[in-house]
Length: 308
Length: 247
Image (cartoon, rainbow over all chains, first blue to last red; front, side, top):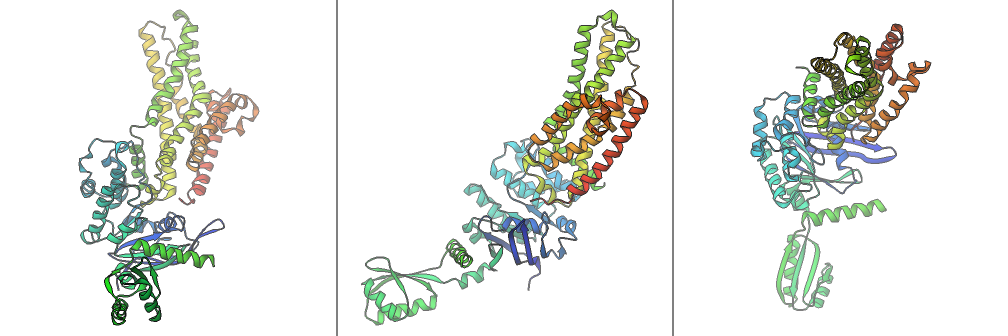
């Protein structure tokens, strides 16, 4: 089993009387590109601030790169790179000046500035003040700051927030390339579910301060049940037949049906049942739900659970 | 290089091309221009004797102490901390291997450096104007006899408590109105309280008393009070504000 770069056990955090995190458990494996999902206000940013030691947990243990964040915060911060929330930069500085802040504190050589600027394609910005950068450039510069010193772990809070499609694509390519090329693990929160689907290797879903789901993306895909869309001769007859076989079909047109929660194996049995009953089957499409559909479904279930 | 000296360099870097640098040049200049402007208008060239020069130097330091310096301190601490509030860079800084307390200390020292620089510039500006007047034919007897370096040192020490108060407020509140309002309101009380027996309870009056106190023991008392209160406030705010979380 891979070493855990982040290990949170029974972590709780409250602001006054409002519980934001409640007995949260989270394990981020090494070399993973770990997506942290959740709606606004459910504790994603609080979790990230606890991991980076900006906030202190009321209860529970947080270990980052095998260090206890409470007692060895500086050891952790020397080894990780962070981009927390909106790109926080000093507009009156040039990119190289800005990066020299992290470089000086971490005791890195000046060549490191050129290396990270090259990585985020900002090498040619020269004498342009940060104030004149586009949001995408600012985000890339903040990412460059996080990449200083080849961190073992990158923690990014919504790294593509506010970016245009080209900017999102740039960041995505960079993130996908990093775990292998720079030997680092990435933990990032995001609202862009299509992007998570394309980039992440693992994900966790946070809802009401608790982790509702945590797995590798590959495992999630195998667990998800899909939809079967059928084009038949008579939708009503086919629906009755399927009901007798124990499947609830939704009639979507005179000749079309949709069945939810169907595995691939079941799809074959349904096809055989229709054909064996002498009904026409013109077309059958099996669709896996997208991550977005899964997320909406999961958060909806969680909301209903919560309401109960 | 220790972390504090690294942070000090970084703080200097952060204020490049900012208003803080302009203020250090402009604020003492305004006082010198005002005092010499009024002085030259009221006093003819022939009347510029030893006592006049002494009065000019004393008026410059007094105006600086009870009017411009408290406002300048409010402004400079507001700008140094406001830089982080405005750009939301607290999290950026504190996600680096430094502590909140180190940053608080360095920012306080940085603000103090700016105040000492402004005090020195005040002295240099007066020297320069006096030298120019000498070239223009003004009598120079006693022109450079005011104990300005002693005054610069006394002002720099005596302003420490108000610098810490303003720094703590600017650090704590993101809205620059809080530190500026505190500075303006407190400045308004200096003349009234500074001339009463209650001046000891009013840190904003310490600079004026340390330089222009009516007796040498009063000047010493002001310096002692300022040093003691300044150190205590610094330790207290450092402990209290260094414990806060960055949400």
